[in-house]
Image: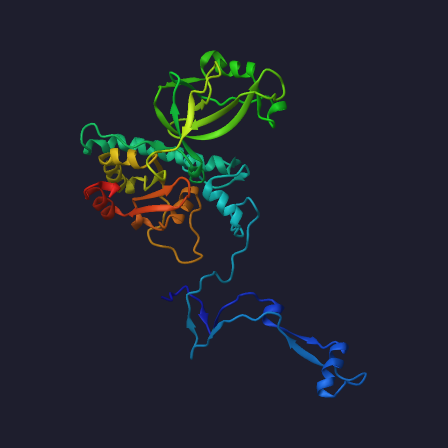
Length: 400
């Protein structure tokens, strides 16, 4: 309804809001050649010095509705009037809407600097949009594990959470599933990088790869991934490996993957002898998808979040079978009630993802949303404590 804050209007026009001369029309002087043509019908040509003829010219016609109430009344309008002044680009003020910038913030992609706050880097400036998005999912994953240490006391003995992924929203569609062979694969804390001279051609000299494997006395080495194990990962690079400074025909291709769960861990498709030990394969479970968990991880919202974690642990086998993993988002900044149009809200990567998934206020939490990793489409949404409890209680759990 129309609240006190709605403007008092004598009239309201619903339609095109393009206040241009082309759309609303304007008076223009008729040119003499036009007058001569018109005179063939009117048989009247203005004499020199006479008042010029004018006509009302409208270049585009659009259908609209004009509402004129008997007395002025308040109308809730989907815009702010008077409009707020735009701040400077990069400031904390109001910025004009940009579809490209919105999508870069939503998907967590972009090398340009971001001034958005994050839970992990409050007050940190000059970090990229991609880093902001990754920081949020990494921080949320850490806070979920911390909360689970306290919440698991109310769960059956031996309960564990499904695999937690640290992947920004835009990278979900790039996920692949890896299978380890050849006796296992060594993981690394850092990814191999060619020298600056060969960075653009993505060519790695064999000696550089050997040096990378022995970097800093082995401190770059991580755990060994067992033969036959499967992992969800992102392909972050592909390089050719050869003896010279330039690519040669027959140089093997080396794919570099970052595991999607846990701290940054990289694995390469070939071992030190050049044998292929890591392969990406298509899942046999049909359309691959991930489960996104939206939680309020602030102190006043952790009760509902703890219930969700216990529910996920109770159906872990089903989640592991149907989904590639769970991505957690802390959406503590969601408002208590849905906002009116144009009302400002906290802009963070996680909040934008929540809005994109149809979650707008605290009443929608906690929530689970299934996203297809190939299509990016929303396949399932369970919102609110009661809906979550009902979904877990039904025979078949989330799979039903």
